[in-house]
Amino acid sequence: MNTLGFTHLPVSLGSFSAGLWRLWLWKKPSFLFPRAGAFGPQVAGKTVSHGLLPLNETDLEEQFVKGHGPGGQATNKTNNCVVLKHIPSGIVVKCHQTRSVDQNRKLAREILQGKVDLFYRGEDSHIHKVKKEAEKKKRERKKKAKETLEKKRLLKELMLKESRPEAPLPREE
Amino acid sequence: MWLWRVKPWGLAPRGLKWKGGLLSPPVLLPLRPVSGCRAPSVTATALVNYWAQLFEERGVPEARESSEYIVAHVLGAKTFQSLLASQRSTSITDLQREQIGELCTQRLQRMPVQYIIGEWDFQGLTLKMAPPVFIPRPETEELVNLVLHEEFQRCQERRGRGTLDHQPHCSPVILDVCCGSGAIALSLLSRLTQSRVVAVDKGEEAVQLTRENAQRLHLENRIQIVHHDITSGVNREQLLPWGPVDFVVSNPPYIFHCDMEQLAPEILSYEDTESLDGGKDGMRVIREILSQAPMLLKDSGSIFLEVDPRHPELVGNWLQSRPDLALSISATHVDFCGKPRFLHIHKSRSCQ
Image (cartoon, rainbow over the protein chains, first blue to last red):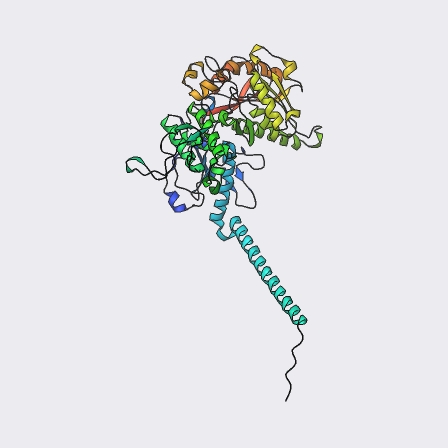
């Protein structure tokens, strides 16, 4: 009997206030932990990608929608929402992007990994780096555009000057 | 064509505030060219709210989810959550509204969402769904993961044995018993690119649907689909076109017969009960598969079954009573709800 209900978490994908979630009492039955390596051979019990901090499966807690009934063939539920919590930081992610529980679990891990990385590494985090990179490129593009405009303006002035007859020099008295 | 009569925004009976959407059930009027009789435009969100409310009033389970999936499907998306906020607030066309109405009316008849939209996702694949073929359950995705994990381990062990191994490539042959829509067979084929699968089902519609799904996914060259009832006896010729198999995988009918009547109308009225009813103790087809497995499986092979949570013990006891099969349970795995759901069975090492 699944005694854990799905609690409506007041979490949006943008929120990861650790202090708040540490107050949350959360049961931790070990049988809910996915098997190590269930997500592929390349990592046993860890999610690793893009130089982000790896997530340990043992630090994660998953929940699915309550009221799944007997489950298996006896049930046909379409709600495949996955709620994933990173226990050390208290960050929670909710994923219902796809119609597959398996895919939602994988996506939830990817999203959570990014958030945890941001949480712990702050300015050094991957998300931050990507953002900084994008801002830098934008500044460079703007600068270049400005320079190009300036060059064009000068060229235009030069062309205008050449096409006009020279003004007579003031006579020296 | 139906014309939905819509109450203006913000009006509610008895001064009650509500978030917006159609208040009363749709009044179905035949569309006639009455001047000024065009229904005001409505957004996706509003329609979802409307139908969710109606489903709830009529006792349709998963009211909101059903409404979201149907509306998303008509808008070309898989889930409502994957739609952009801008898409959710754009006006729905009359045709879309009509399509949504027709599909939602089917939901009012308790038709499963998967049959209504004609498709469902499993392990990253989108498969066609059609009644009465059994709809893949989310738990079964883990069954596929177990097979994949086992295969990857075996493959690494084989590679680890080095150059003495004449077959460094891992190209497992898999037998999927009671394949249904082909979910297990096709997801394994797509993840194990060198694998071949024999998929067998006793239902004609299941065989056809598996064939169609295989073609849609361009996997038909690595699958053989066999129309055969395994309870009628072993058919080695048909089941072993590539010789003994590395894996026997199955999600066989495993519901206890006495539990059948408690199933939801979605299941009882639309899905093939033969794909669910496992007899008195839910073990009828399981016993058949295990009885035949030794003849079908390589010595190093594995059997993976999805079962009822009561079965691990029952299967364990039964296998002990059948030493002639020389099979034993190497592991029981839980599903995402923590229930014992999957059995990993292998050939016992022969006694010296």
